[in-house]
Image (cartoon, rainbow, N blue to C red; front, side, top):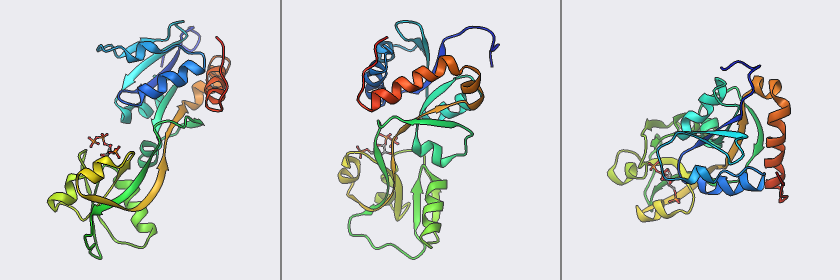
Length: 218
Ligand code: PRP
């Protein structure tokens, strides 16, 4: 962590990828011009136009780690990541973007055995969900293209995110149960939030207002 006495911009860790397209307009509404985040280059550290906010571009799963260890004051994290792993983070705002659902899906019309094999990127969420339903499941960790697992016979079921439903449809799968709703949350390092409250709180409040429909100037 850098010297707390040293003035520095607020550091916001953001996930690379499609979420940036909805995050940038939201930041804009909160008075933070972050168009630079959409630039097509390889810089992993970028700044808002006014230099007030420094952005770290990270793999989604790494965002909470940077915030927890204080390399970033704030971060944007999917609820799926927060549910899957244990983090000691303050969660002041649900940003209401990146909305999707965590579901259980299977091949259309397939019969599910009593002890199903379940492929997922989210073993903890899956294990907890099936345990809560009294189902003993064998959970298999896969890192992506999860929909392939039932198609190839690796698993009977998957637990995965669904946004438009196209990936399920195009691979002959159907949703069987909904596990929970997912969206992106603003998270904060608890110690830094207290220490730099005067600088961080207006940004958090600005985002909160932006979500509730208000527009902030400056
Ligand atoms: C995610 C998710 C689904 C898909 C759902 O995968 O794991 O596969 O998006 O979106 P849809 O309902 O709009 O089709 P992602 O694109 O992140 O790639 P991955 O398979 O490598 O995880």
